[in-house]
Image (cartoon, rainbow, N blue to C red):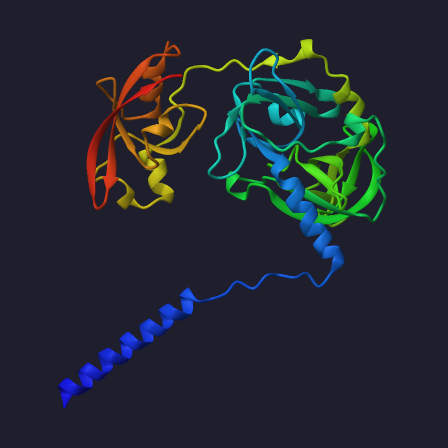
Length: 360
């Protein structure tokens, strides 16, 4: 009797799992149909403009930007130059920069840039054989005024905080059509679409998909008789009608070339810092070295290294810190090849793997 009950129980479990499996496999996706014409307009507009919005990554952080212009590179077949507008404070420290297009897409290194600090605006340029989406901006292209109306709905797109929030979308309304920014009357407009660090340089759209501003800052708190209290919905965007004449006036001769230096193309952490926020199971016992936590996809390391590789040796020398790694690259030139040894988790064990990385 016990055997029969056991068999019956097993058959019941198997039947349940089979039914669950069938249910999962045959689940249909219901197409969303917006009940509101206005909402559908917003959805369609966002889908149309998103491919032109990018993140501008620098050596000290990142901001956002929009591709607004392209042209062929003279003398190079199938090569185009793209212009990306962002804030001056995103790129003002100079150094190497790259454009991030989202997950599973290769970054492109910035070739040169030009800024106008007084209005906190900048343009960075890249060259590529890839076809990128350009979003025309009428005040720049056609020297016209885009009307901005108090109360009109706006959409802010950018990458706040971290690249995992790439092309994050927030909505609001224009609160004031003209406002002083950095002491310049009328340079900005104000709106209540949420902004956070990283949104700087990202476009502010109206529901027609027209760029009406470049997000630049927010008021974090306000002083009252009762003390300082958090502010809400007090966000600045630079008025595109004010920026357009500046952008049109940028001269080819004034672009500053970005000088790239030879690098492996990895972001690393010291072991103790890594273990503060990550599981010890990601590293071998008693780990000594530096941990790979990210890559610059414009360089070669990502082709042979993996995230969480523990770099233990370079060019035959033991690596115990980031300073050791930097010392191995001192005086390096493009074209140099460096031998790097890592401990890598393969399945449930750690293996020692040695690779060659060329600085190109």
